[in-house]
Length: 90
Image (cartoon, rainbow, N blue to C red; front, side):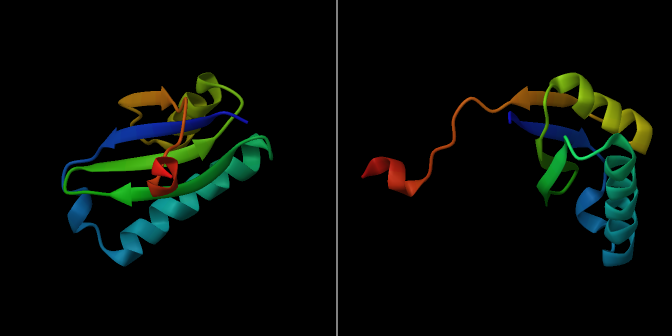
């Protein structure tokens, strides 16, 4: 299944409390449950003013639909073409 990186511009994201992040996570999971099992949230990285999310999904349209239903920005959605890590150097 294709993997996507979603960039969400959220001013002050790095200052969100654990409780606020829990609420965002619950909203995301609720939308995913309604959309069905064909889409999976892998994890997210929270930075100062952005959240970068990694999703497995059949296509970009489903990623954008999830964002719309959840009320999340999806400023950039990029399909991952390859994953590399330190073992790539071996």
